[in-house]
Length: 290
Image (cartoon, rainbow, N blue to C red; front, side, top):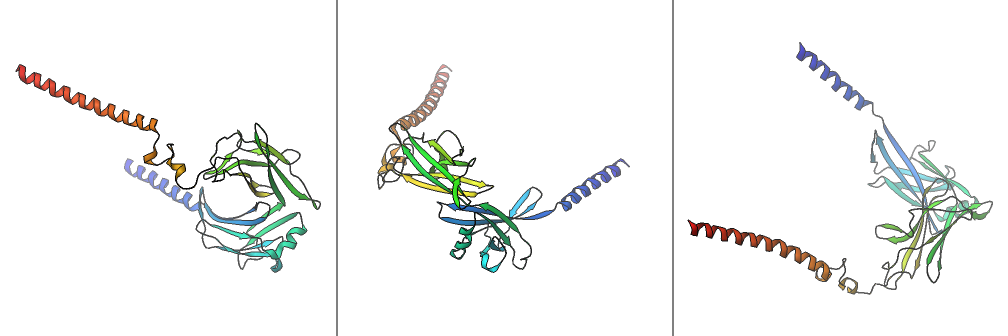
């Protein structure tokens, strides 16, 4: 009787787990993001994914049509198809330049083919741009970034905009100062002193300064870059890696590192050899005494 009762409890628990699994609702999510690079190139990135509980997966090979301001043939930006990551990219066509310049605020719309009466995603932004400049003094080098928004047919400062300001490196943006992000003041500007010294640049010693506004609710994502001769010039060929530095090849390892490594190896093997000799010596003494 006790075993039957335990089996019944286990059966009910399994049924509850199955019911909870079946009750998880899958939801398709379509999102749009707007990007403006160097105040000259605007494009959209559409992302399509399926969310099931806490799990999300990209939806591949899904086609959408993109429109500017309204779903109409003259306002069509283009058709896109999602890639393996569930994303698709589309640039604003030259044919919509007049519509783009006519207003300070725009709405982007994404619809699935055959469902023009149903909007899959919407994104509304205010036109904005970002400028970058430098101030070089005798003791310090500073980066000046200003964000401007288009309002009442003119460009005005955009305050309280959070951004990253730094130097473009292979792994991302290295912050120019001590803070991770900076916020514009009432004049729409931030000034950041470059505290990183001796950064390697290209063959002319140029490094690339970058300012990025990411996923702002009003302006989208803004990006600007500027090359300045504030780095250390890297000589052509392999001369840079022929120096005895930590980033050099095996044959150009720093001498102090070689000394440390070989000292450890010699110390370990020396101790082992010494112990083996002592064991042999003890064994000989024991044999002789017997």
